[in-house]
Structures are given as structure tokens and as C-alpha cells.
Amino acid sequence: MPITVLGGTKLADTTYDIANSVRFNDGDSPSLRRTIPDDESSTGNRNLWTFSTWLKRGVLGTQQAIFGSYQNSNYHTVIEFTTDDQLNFFDEYNGSKNGQRTTERKFRDITAWYHIVCVWDRSNGTDALKMRVFVNGTEESSFGTNSVPSNAGTLGADDQDMSIGERETVGQNFDGYFAETFFVDGTAYAASAFGEFDEDSPLIWKPKDCSGDLTFGTNGFWLDYEDSSNLGNDANGGTDYTEANLAAIDQCTDSPTNNFCTMNPLNDVNVSGHNFTEGNTVVNVASGERASSFATIGMVNGKWYCEMKLTNASGHDFLGIAGKGNASATDQLGWNDYQWSYYSATGKYAHDGSEVSFSGGDNTWGVNDIIGLAIDLDSGTKTLKWHKNGTYQSDVTLDEAASVTDWGAWFFACGSGTGSDDSVYAMNFGSPSFSISSGNADANGYGNFEYAVPSGYYALCTKNLAEYG
Image 1 (cartoon, rainbow, N blue to C red):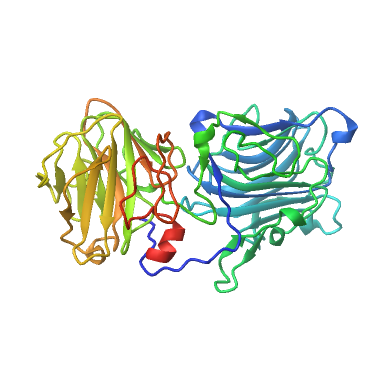
Image 2 (tube, rainbow, N blue to C red):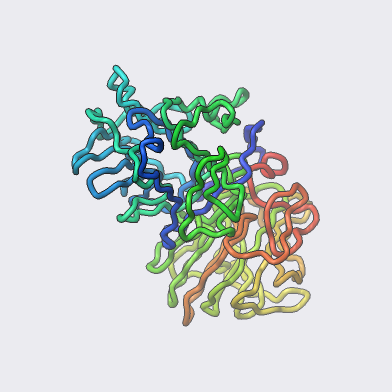
């Protein structure tokens, strides 16, 4: 099913904004790593530490590391998602678990930012407090696996690696986004040290400015991801983390305080060779397949804009909107009611199974073309307008209201017909995975687009939705 943010939805205001995140694409084996020097002055507190990060998942059902340490095959600490999408926190010593907590709860929302805090307090006199796990401000209390540590932990020893987004020598790289990542050496902090519940919407957990209130200790750090040339920069002034397979383009404005639309791998035609990469901003469809993919945020009101760069083409490629899924795996986007698309092979638009010429003429498109799409749901006449490399086609009038569609909202969509080559759609809702040569934000200053955002249109993100959605 689609994930919808309907018109009128109000989102909690934040007095503290997180400007940036870093995007991890597991196929690239990305990581941030630091080696603790082999000397006594660098030894951390192996009995007491706190880890905190915000993250947004990209891929489900695979084992993915969040944070941990590695000294050799017998000594390591791991915080990860399991293949069952549970949160797993453990320390391992000489091949045996020295304390482990695995949540019964599963974390499968690829649209949401989760705040995760793990506390290691091995010397605490209360067993339940020796290992603690918080998610979105609430402490987890139900665990499928729950064992108490009997020894000091491995994390904190000198001459070991600490890493984010990987499990060293094993891989299991994270896929998705990290924001505001903290490690505190020598102090146990609850989640309330890093975030707070909103006063007006008390079920909403949001970040707060906590950097001046933390005691970081010997190996503590704060990664804010605000320096695109040094994504591993320790904003607390300590030793930076070294990036592997991360670049400036992996810095994003998608954050816990301004959540951007992405594509939705949970709502697509399930065909072989159809997969999602780059934090669900790139859709890959194998040659010979017909598949349509839909975005995570639905549109009922407002004026919204996105771009798509076609980086590989089947020859039958589509960009548009949908208010329902394809009726079968052999359908193409625009071949159903409540679907509209711009068809690369003919340069026409498709709706309800028919191809129609634009009033201003047809214009085919292909590899490396950037196609823009603007949807107006506020005016008396609801319209779509596509462009090719900054040149706009004529307006197309929507003949259905969002409320009558199967999903009750319109969703940005891309799709492939059967072709002789793979299709790769790099979708840009304002936090692109491809290089932008000019850089254009909307009137509120949100998003990064290749071409100027049409006047009155906005990037599809939660701050804009709160005002115009």
C-alpha cells in the first residue's frame, strides 16, 4: 500500500533543525571508520557508553550494521538490523555473546526517521539497566533474546576499529540515511538527552540541541554530516572518521526535521530485476521487464515539483503520477485509469491506456535527459506540466480529483515498458543522488534541482507539506 500524507496534515514544529544527513548505498560498501590508537591514553570506558543516531532505512529484510567495533574475529560489539528487521545489540568475546538484546518489535517503515539510542552500562547493579535500547524516545522492554553481560565490553579497547554503517570484514553495510550521530564514552544517557516529545503533539519524538550538554569522554564523537568534503568530521573536535565509498553527493538535506519524499519499494509491481538504490531515490528495472514504481508521499492539495534523470534507458520509459497501481505486471504507467505519464518513445502523454499528443507538440527523450514534472492541485483547473531539460510542454488537465482515485491521493511515479536494455530512473525530490550543475531551490529554500522550480511550486518534503499540503 502507498504511504500517504493527506492534505491538512499538521506536522510538529521543531525549534532545532538538523540540516543534513549522509546517504549510504549498501551496494557501494560505504562506511565511516576510525581506529583507536594503541596506547593507554586512548583506551575508552569498556563498562559505560552511549550511542545515539537518527536513521532512515532504505532496504528491508537484510542484515545491516548501524554501529560497532572490531578488534579481531573474537572481539566485537554490534548494533544492527537483522534479516527479520529487528534491532539487535550485542557484545561478543572469544566467540561467545557477552550480553545481547534483540527486540521482538520489527522496524519496517522506510518512510520514517527512527531515533535509536543504545546504552552499555555493564557495572550497573540492576540487570535490566546493563543494556538499554530506546527507539523514538521510548525504552524497548520486550526482547526475543535477552542476556546480561558478565564481562567488560569489547568496545573501548585500544587498537580497535569503531565504524558506522558496516560490520568490518563481514560487510552487512547499512542502506539508507544517517543523521546526528553521537557516541559518548563513559556516561550513560537516556534518549531524553538527545530528543524530546513535542508539547502540542506528545506522541511525536523530535531532536533537540544537546551538543553542549554532553560529556563526550575519551573516544566520544558527534557526526553532523554538514561538511560535504569531510562527511566523517567530528563536530565535537575529536578525531575524524574516515569515509569509504562516500562522496559529497551523498550529503543530503533529507533529515529528521525535514523528511523528503523517496520512492517506495513496498508499493510496486513485484518483478525480477526491479530494485531500489541510493536511499530509494534510484529505481532500476531489468531489460524485458514492465514495472512501475510509486513515491512515498501522496498529494491532495498544493503545487509540487520533482525531476528525474534517465541514466539508462529501455527505450520505453515513463514519468508521471498515479492514484492506483498497475492492474497487472504487463501494464505500463499510464495504461490504467488514475495514471498519467510522459512516454519517452513517442514524446506523448499516456492516460487510461491512450497516448495523446501535447498541444505544443511531442518531444521524445532518452539517456541523460532530465524530465521535470509539476502538479497543480490548488487551482480551479488541476494540471500537470512536464519539461525536458528545462523546456516545458503544454499543460495537461487532470480529469479526476485526487479523492476519487483508488489511493485517495496522487503519487509521483516512474515506470518501464518492455525494452532491450535496463532502465535506471534517478528521481530527485530535492535531495538528488546525481550531480547538479546549477542548483535551484524552491521559494522556501528547500531542495536542490537542476532547473528552476516553477513559481509557486515546492519540493515534496514535510516542512512544505506543513504549510501547503
